[in-house]
Length: 233
Image (cartoon, rainbow, N blue to C red):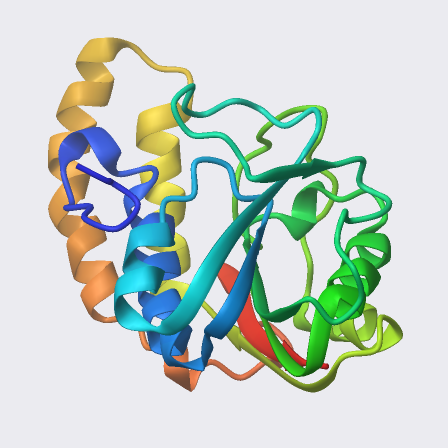
């Protein structure tokens, strides 16, 4: 079972459920924008490959990862690796590209974004997600938590236009995600973790059902779980 695309809420996955469910949901919303040759940047084990090939007009799927990337699955290898400075593709090579939870790991994000812009064809689509409320991960290669304003600036500086940025979740989802992370990842006894997980599972479910991410406005005091969006060349 691919728990990136077929995940169900359980006491054992309260930490990852919200983010994985949400990322796949917003990806599905935008799959119809993908076509032709697609570049998966920071592809890892390419958990969304099957869905995209089955539900879009993508004809060729190319996975790209950094040379020093963590190996999540020994059976799945990227089609290409790169040094983080220059992608091994000619200009105008792809109709679309995407990167889920990648840009927060880039020390100089505009290098990655400018390279993405370069290899996209005119009018090409770049889909992205980034976390906002998440624990330190892949330490020490965890660089940033973006606001919508900084992310838009980096995209514009890299040449992108028609930029749309939205929240993956608002206050309710943020509380659900934080409770899940706390109960599954903070320091506590296994007995306490087991019982608190059972107690918090219905609370997290309730919070997620009542979250209205589509109503989130990026204003003073707003809380978000993360960001996603589309930018075009």
